[in-house]
Structure formats: structure tokens, C-alpha cells
Image (cartoon, rainbow, N blue to C red; front, side, top):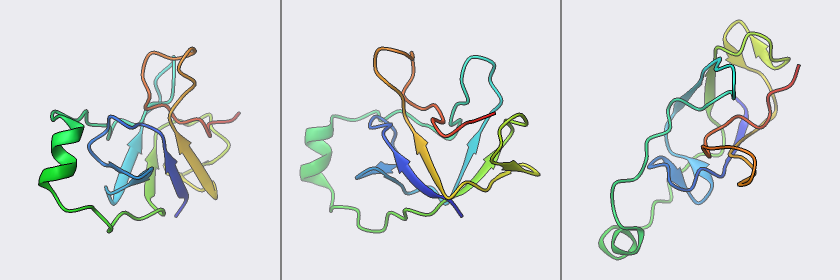
Length: 104
């Protein structure tokens, strides 16, 4: 499984830059390869920090299902890259849930 670094800070599955979802899915969008497992937080982050215990169960290794057929790291629908980054440069993309590891 790839080691995942996630900068999608507004995703409910992001815990200290790790994904707490056991399997994520990247689609084959023409504009950007997007993590479609992304789910936006619906709560106030400050309130969340005080009401819930800190999550220490986040795993840096995640199974990634990928439909980006043109990507070098796609092997029969699974990502085989050693490291994967989800996020984007703020000035370049509209969403922060893009696969930055995608390569042709």
C-alpha cells in the first residue's frame, strides 16, 4: 500500500495529514485526478478539537483504488506508487483533493 500524505485539510478523513479511511478512490477526471473519497467537514474545527478526543488511529498507508488509466502508477486499478500526495497548490487548482503523484 502507498504511504499517503494528504493536504486536503477540509476533508473529514484527514487526521494530521493522514487519511483515516482504509481505502480511498481516485477518479479519471480530465481536469484533475481527484480523490473522490473526499468529504468536506461540516463542523467548526475549533469546536471539534474541544469536544472530541484526538484521533491517533490514522494510518499513513492506505489502499488506493485508481481509475486514472494513463497514470504510470496505476496497476489494474490500484495505485502502486510508494508515496502518494493528495492536495494542490492553492493558486493552481479549484479543489484541494487532487492526486499530485499522477504522472504519465
